[in-house]
Length: 284
Image (cartoon, rainbow, N blue to C red; front, side, top):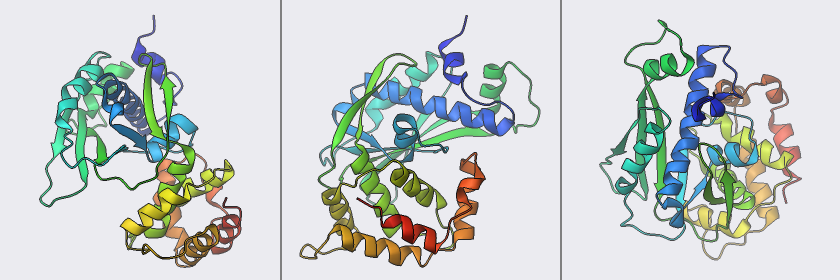
């Protein structure tokens, strides 16, 4: 008889050790969402980011973190009350993980914590095999963050999952998710490490004919200092911002960043200034 854990892992490839590690991480992410849902977390918060896009909209790349935003600003929000529920939910399917809050040295609107579990212990027990190629001290670590002072005008929807048991999640709808990703493309300080994952997701949204929540994006751009309150901001303004950004990117570095997270490297073949400029004309 299959356990809940083996059911959840059944669709994942197991050809390599890296496949197995990623499978465990993705399943842990979903069990954590179930635990947060049971604890009432989504009465106050919504799920967004790359992992939300993967789980609920079919993004075909691995995403490492769990990103959340409060529905309304609350500087007094605390993550700690949810830790025991998370640990119990994971333990209920045989996963031994602890939750550790990240203590920050400076004030921030982002509250962070890490789910941690021993890599070798879980790979050996889940896949019923001995594996001497894993450092016994290696840790599966999944970061989750909550923005306690979110930009205005996000819109939400409720989605449902059946495993590990039926639960619901409040998450940003597709236009609001897309707004967050476009904000990252325009504003993220890439320096020497260009985040090709942002570009990959941008293509995914356009391929799925996603529309963009412009009021929410404007709020994000104002928070980042890119726009002022009285600045004109239209779809055409946004296209010009993006095209200017796409002219500055080292696309070979961008490809190297995203390659470990995708299965089909051929999807990156066309990446160039001309490619991204052209597809941006389809932005709605």
